Image (cartoon, rainbow, N blue to C red; front, side):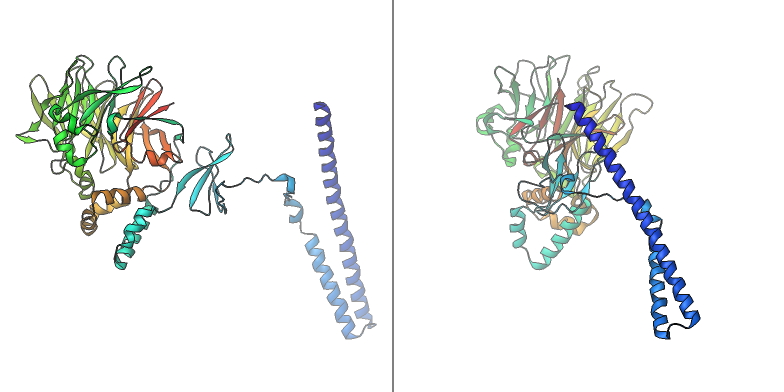
Length: 527
């Protein structure tokens, strides 16, 4: 049966080709016949006019007929009509793919990305959809829908303020679009990530680490505690440590940023593989350490030159020397005022070094704009540092002839948070958000900075979230050591709402653990 079908199809193809060839021959012969008729009419007209057999009016008509015939001759002899292939589409030749189950229409433009994925198309309800060929379905790629709470806020503004705000926001939204697609994509969709709720309703798993024996992960949360995850069969969180034990009961589960100063707010975490000690960079309480078997951190470097640290953030350790490196994000603002650091362009941040042997703190680099996460290279020759405000990854050299110098590795399209080395090579950078134009303009234009700083912090966050919500939502990047993007992690569908801001990605045993300073859960994605 299969052979017969193939032979039948072959015969049909030959028949179709034969008919097509015959059709061209007929058209060609018809043109020759028409040409002969035109020439004949022209000759008759000339003869009759020359012999005076036709009256002038009739002569004009004959000449006109001859001219029309000649024009038809020229058109029929146009060689281009044979060279242009005709693609004839019949009803059964086209597959009709419904744009969206939601009833959207109008796929006006179609495009494929640099990897050949797609197509992508814009539709009537303001979204851009992407076609998944293997799954044969559309997924939402991006949206330009304004959230209701922003519309309500705009309604309270004066007409002049509305126009100014809309102009600024529209320009920022357009300029915030990121069209780059020349990297490998890791697209996370609904159901791809396991969400692990934190203990006692806490939130903000900002940093993620594993013990030297692979136990954990451990994560720092909003109420001042460090939690430890017990894998199957238990699959639950337990308290590992806290900074202020006398306030533990009242602080437990708190998400109130106003209480962070009294409860503590651990951010960066790092284990010493030789001693088993856990180093904690607490935003308000400075650099601390938890000894094995203990459940309370003790101050290691609580202050600098008799002044408490304003905003300790990232931490890293040189396992060979025992030296601790950590960042102080700002000497002017505290963690709960982090937006002010970005908007004002504050550059009082520092990279510091603590030597336990000498019990001494040294400033390695100052004048930094929101220094954040740290990661040491595998050979210990340099540190990578995320400078959040500028969107840059910097390299501070510890060894080699470049020692004690700092250089730019890469400029990112978003605000980088923490950095973690990947076992597959390179390093992961969590992106707090896209680096929108509002932040850039507020630094460049003092008048706009003053307007923004008068808004409540929560309002600024919502506006920033709205402006950076256009286009593909990339939450993390895996970069090579020279700063080239290897992999981009993006979220699609409803999961976009869950991962609006990413603090850190920790890769372990084929799993990606995803932490967000805003979320009440830790994400687990299996590669």
